[in-house]
Image 1: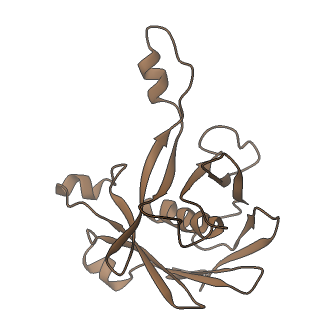
Image 2: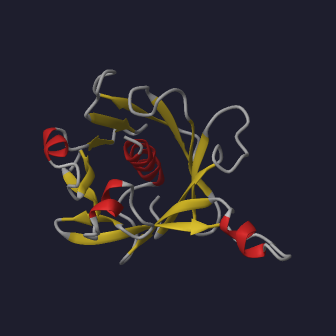
Length: 198
């Protein structure tokens, strides 16, 4: 089932994951649509993404050493393939394309890109919260931004406490429902988060 709004929550970063890194995707109603207990490095170790019905989706790299593609295999036989630019990324580290992914059933392809040209230092040291967009055939389908949890902060340093609240990535459709499911978004964000650290 697809939605208009999906939020990627990393409980390890928010301090709740004592036994390892746990991530989940929730919809606009707060319902968990996909979850994963991350085992090993995301880029090189297979991961199991569980959907809202408790079914396993397998995310696996094409090779353990320096993988360039990952495949998410669903329980009904549907698969998505994720890829990152290889040689082009080495030749041009400031290239807009971060990650591409496609439905291998109907060959529909999408790209997660950095949409804003910024000063060189900003591009070198990471994206801002609103620089990312999922596009299909040059048409923006959804925007990716950061959402900070709103806590009940009071006192003289309330603004500082609020700034320290966990921030989660949120994907919001620009028009209609998202064309891919929550497990696909979770796999996309695992890889996106991992590749940003490189």
